[in-house]
Length: 431
Image (cartoon, rainbow, N blue to C red; front, side):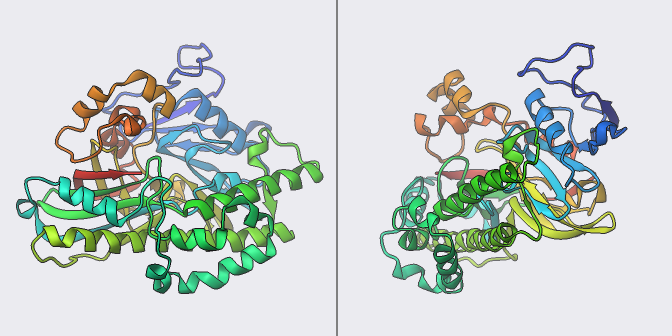
């Protein structure tokens, strides 16, 4: 189903308010496909959106992005799309000879890792709380980090020279973190906060999976903030007019461009290794509580906040996936739901119009502050019934109702991916 849209006018001819859903499509007409700027009026590039469940603020951000002269072909917005800072979360942004640091964001390389175990659900203990507590002891969550650095030396060897060069070249980074040369090591193999999680899940065949979500921690955040500010200064100095200062970019050929590429590549690799190290810690921590097990499939380790060079529509471009994963033909990926819903292991269909991409999750439909104001701890207990997890006010902002319906998100992108496994969590550790 294709719907053409004018950003400024709703389907009833009235400009929508900030909180209104602008376009509504019938559920039976899936997948949904909306296109903005089809006529490319005023030089704006088209925006192809794989859902009708998109709020006005997100549409406005997509419109701003589409006006940038550096955009190649079009912008693709995934079914979990929602407003972010500058660039929209759930967007795929191809750029010619330029990169927008704020589109990559500050959780550089954030993504997912999952592996299937040689265990059936019937082999899990009735009480999963000891497993959750064991995981929380093994993997620091929130702002916590490991107390002993030496335990992570093997995993950090290949990263050490790169971060030393970055900290020497960009002295301001040393001031943005307390003891940065220790912090990145101590945070390797840690979860972080917000929507980051570690889960034990059961698939449709009753097989047990371990799945986790995290990124580049404090060092990635510092790198992101440093270069976002640098990009703003570059754009101001070059007198480039932008619809939003958060869309400031580095142009290929400039010193800062190559510095950013070097830094973002390091942070993305750090995020990948962080998830890998965490997975190892989780597996070791749950071993004493379970029958002997092995891993029965290759671990899936995929970013969903990152940039890399790819070839699309006849050109080599920089593709930024801000809350989206690569879904090339045959490629496996992970699409998690909320802590009370289902998650999916998917195989990409290589759809060129989405730049071979799909959503990175369910996507928020409500801000964290709004969720805390609207829901109670009792609501959280009700919505996470059957899941061994924290049920206190500290994780109320992650209540399932704050997220979009993951099944509807999957319906909207049925032409982007096929489902390989459907997972339901039985244990969840939140940051």
